[in-house]
Length: 164
Image (cartoon, rainbow, N blue to C red; front, side, top):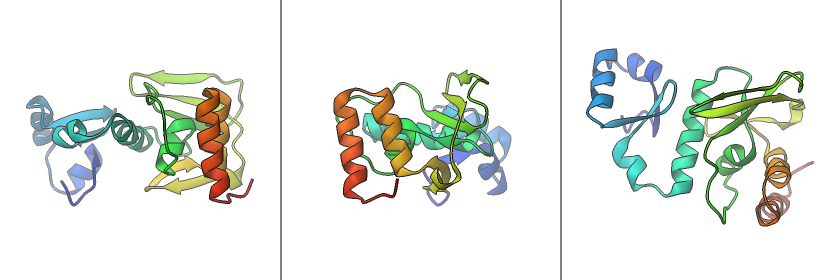
């Protein structure tokens, strides 16, 4: 499991030869914790992590579970880019599906997916998952967070000299 990475999908475990029964049994015993519909993390790793690292792991799991053409955004994208944080992490990961912004939001107990405009140049892969660019994530944090969150995120992006 350590070889496969911190966030494991059921499909990845199956490909590695772990049966569905074994996965279910490890989850029942509390060795694995479900962080998204099809993603799990070892309990010991999750419990040893800070609140922000737990949020990063849940965001990774959410990204691996929501399907193609969905990009982590806001703090979920920002934390993958290494944006420093000063407050508490959000309760749920957030993602953006490019498309008609009037479509609405899909929400589950693992996160929310909004639909909206996402230009091609702001679609990226970070840590093996789809996420918005650092510039887009910083702007989203600024738009939806408080002024200190905005200052930290935008300052971090500017110091990285990210293109607009």
